[in-house]
Length: 243
Image (cartoon, rainbow, N blue to C red; front, side, top):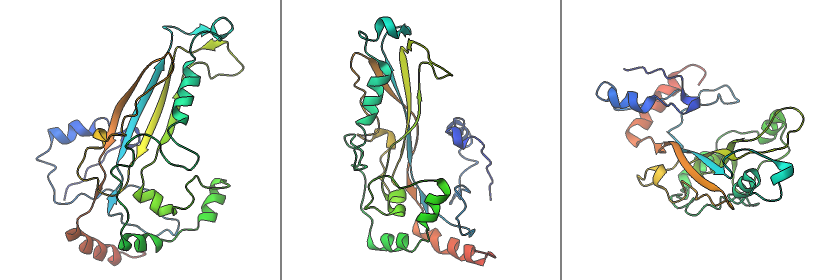
């Protein structure tokens, strides 16, 4: 048995790829068990037989070569912030669908066994919303909570940076705006394709009058545990007290 402790997961594990490459032979194993994820509200331990992939993308829109006074240039130069916000707004429609070309190309429908397993999972959605002070969940409402969590990719905007964000106001038009986006991928196999090679992985940046670019700075391929390991893991799980 080999134990690996890694403390940089929340920032994308920047050193992990080189570590695994350098110590590939020492890390060889038949099965990898990762201790991660939230505690179930029931307090019971949980085994997840696979994980979603993820894509981390940075979008940059640049106008002038320096910040400018809004009173002098607000009517003339393209506004990096507005154009970036408009761009981000086109990536998801009111029905909750991601509109980036090719985004859903590798999504495979759930089979009957998977749907039954997801339906059996306990969840008090009203209690969860109350705890988080949410009045409703995002669209599409016709997809169940666990189906959306495991079988569909999505798009989140984790950061939008540029210009002045302190107290009061400041008459500055930022010359560059940076958006940090994350694409949690489906938990189902994706026919072996690298997530960074997906058609919709790196949305083309089109912003009026801006020098714009997208950069893929992190990815993790989705995967699923193979059948030979499922039965012994479940048996070990049920042997634990309070399972």
